Length: 105
Image (cartoon, rainbow, N blue to C red; front, side):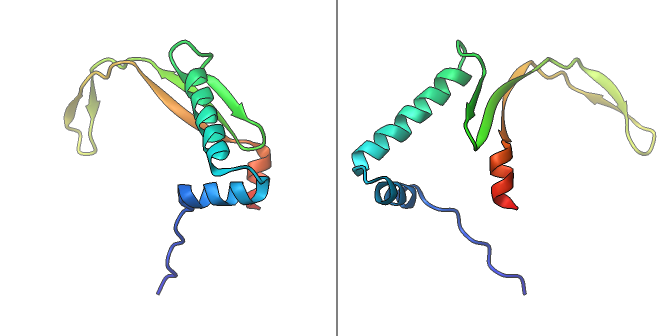
């Protein structure tokens, strides 16, 4: 039988660990995390550059997907299938940086 999958750490556990290691109050840690999320939102938002890197962890960027026109496709048995058009969209991509990849090894 496979081993049970470990659960992710909760927000309260993250806050507790950060307050213990940095010797800041819980309110200060919450305000730092809120400021960080606001900074990410500002940079990946409509008027931002569309990319932000959290040093040593991840790079978050917005990828613009162009619209795809409607087309016909051939299925496995040779039948034609109509594929509907898709509008243009924006996708968020999170890329791990080298330091994060090295942490996993």
